[in-house]
Image (cartoon, rainbow, N blue to C red; front, top):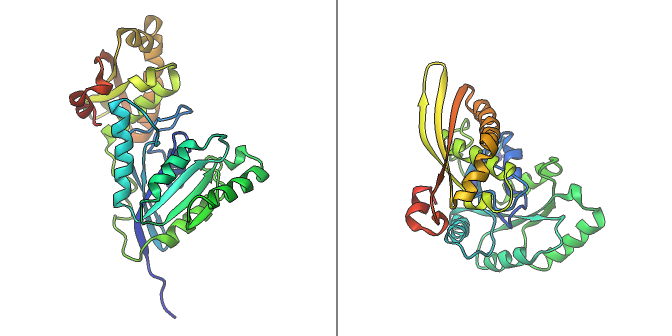
Length: 295
């Protein structure tokens, strides 16, 4: 009797904004490494997450949502997402099954048609759709691309996520694990701090503020009893700065308090978090500032 071979490789998660890509990654890892919010385009960076199974190591790359945009920031984000697919063995195409407009998905499928790689379709948020609508959607997408598999799931409710993992695992090539089994991501603590603060800006502010803001970690000092962190929230206009600070500093305190709790949970240590708000005009279209902010 032959021993089953271990499979390992990279899976690129791609989809339109708010398809639930980051929620899925956090679910399968059992911990949060990719920030989420109800607002689209929350993810701006490719995030690597690794899960170890008895006979496989699946290395996920969570990419930003693919969408049309005229700003240099969003053009770079979309280019970054598509470039990530060049280095993966399998593509996981996530689709919001509760949506009523699939124009963005059809645009993505046009790009995927050029990729000579297996594509698994994850129809997400089935907990928000009735069965008849999901079955109809399966039939519709089956006619649009030669998917290796189509799996209806709910990443948030952990429905059929195991089935999805099994389909992805079957598509991976045989080979040894590429990362030590204790490794679950390659992102640094400073990067996660930046992302947590940015998540709170997305969740607590409205209008255009989240899409005009960036976060930098200016200091990260580990002391005996606590970690001292200084971070700056960059916006493009003085009016936006006023909104983030809030009346008497109320909004900035809310952002800081919520972020500090998550950072302490992540680091397992007390944190002194100091937030600053800076106006960096037109950073979303300035190549130098984009590079400084990690884009």
